[in-house]
Each structure stands twice: as C-alpha cells, then as structure tokens.
Picture 1 (tube, rainbow, N blue to C red):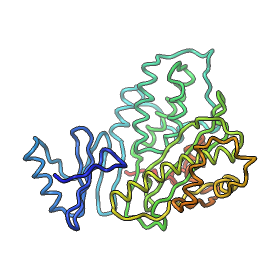
Picture 2: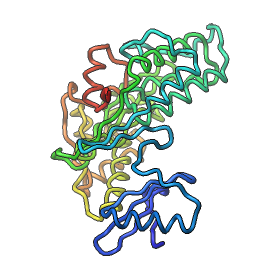
Picture 3: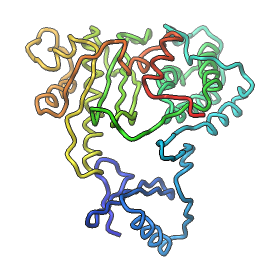
Picture 4: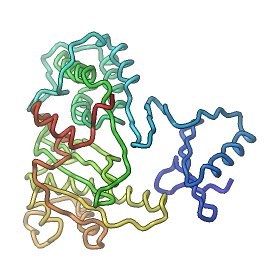
Length: 342
C-alpha cells in the first residue's frame, strides 16, 4: 500500500502522497491511523477492509488499556479502568486513599531478616503497576524502587507496594492532557539524579522527562549502571541518558513531520555538571568516567543539544529521582503534567 516503516520506531508506518501524509501505529492486530486528510484516512480504511476482516471503531477511545478522550480542547489520556482492575485483583478496592505513593526519604533495603511474602503475587502486583506508569509518570520512581526486590520480597516491601496502591485509589482519574502546543521550545528535556540513593549498592537514580510543544511525551526513572563519586558525576550520567532519549525523539520527529527540528533544550540543575559537559578541560574530575557518558559532549559540539541551567525548584525530573514530601510531591506532579481529568 506504499507505506514505509519508520526506522526510529518499528511499530510506526508512514505514507506520503503529494501534500497528504498518513501515519499508522500497529500493535499485533490493533491499528490506529492519523493523517492530514480525512479523505485519505477513509480510503485507507476501505482498502484495509478489502484485504482483511476488520472492524472500524471510529475515533480512538480505548487502546491497550489506555482510555483516550478527544475534544477540541485537547486529548486526555488515562488508565482509570485498568487502575480499578488492579485494586480489585489485589483486594485493595476498599482501602483508605493516600496523597503520596511513597514516604519521603524512605530507603528500602533487602530486609533479609523480614518475613518473606509470596513472590509470585508480589511480582504480579508490581508488574501491573509498571504498566500503569504509561500514563502516570508520578508513579515511575516508587514503582521502580519496589521493582528492585522481586527476587525475595518481604512484608516491608509489600507494605511499600500497598502504599502505592492506596495512592492509586486516591488518584484513580489522574492522567495526561495534550493540547495544541504554545511552548517556546519544540523539544525540551529535564534530567536530574539523586546521589547514592540506593543504600544497598550506593548507585544513583536518574530521572528524565521530555516535552514536545509543552506536552509530556517521554519519561524514565532508572538506577544508574555504575556508582557515581559525586553529585556532579551523577548529574552528568543522567544528562547523557537524557541526551540519548532526546536524539531518538528528535529523529522520530523528523521522520514523522519531514521537518528538521530545532536543537533539543536540556535543563539541568547542577552547574558543575553543565561545565563538565561543555568544557573537557576538567580532566582530573572526569577522567575516570566511562567513555560512553561523554556522548553528550559530542551532541553539544554538533549543536544537537543546548544545555541550560534550571533552578532546583523548577526541575521537573526531581519527582523521578526520590520520594518527596507531600506538598513538594503535589507541586512537582502538577509541574510534570499529571492532572485530575474528571
């Protein structure tokens, strides 16, 4: 049918005919289509129905457990039904809701002397919560932490999971809102880290979040692969991970729109790390850092990424690196873009 597979994302296909563009996303036998012409979309659907036995479900409203509500004001994305299903399956549908998913400054360890719990049930609960993070970036850090204890979970770890479920109960209709972009930066990212946050191996946690025209499109909360010797180094490693994600998003954007995007704006709240990215003279402080983390320097030299300093209070990735106090968590969640959609 003349579609070309997107090299940046294997599940996306694109077709250009004259001034009209069609983009389709495929997951096994589920397909959604968008484009610049409703006439082209209709013709494509008719063409597909001749080839395959298919159902036309109209405007996208439900896809892989995600609820989509489209209007002239924007697009709402949430997983309320899935969240209710998780609570029902775990017997937590009648629990008391809470306003934060993890106690501030909570440090979980292996708890080797604690009472073990059913690992299969624990993994099922955590796995379900991991899928919920597709529309709930505010859960990413806490779910990431409890995921580290799948091998031998104890009652202490289960208690932390139940705290997350209580938070889900209180924020069941929360999700993401996408509106027509009015932001100055086309593609903007924030990266942050907490130094030696894991008390078992003293590795830091990286947090990154990206916005396209002011709308959140990508986020991650991940423990770093190696131990950082300073907060500067931890931030440098987090920024490199963010640079890799940003370059991929930039390539995907170019592929879908056909336009060469502007440089990626990356916001970091550590001035020493920014100097290290821009100026390789700091050899004594950086010579032990793995070569792969110097990828960000090359991106800056080529003009693909512009790194700017942001105040810690405005660092949107902060919520992805540590458990925050209640008021701070609420502020950061709002800044991140997670809202009550009811």
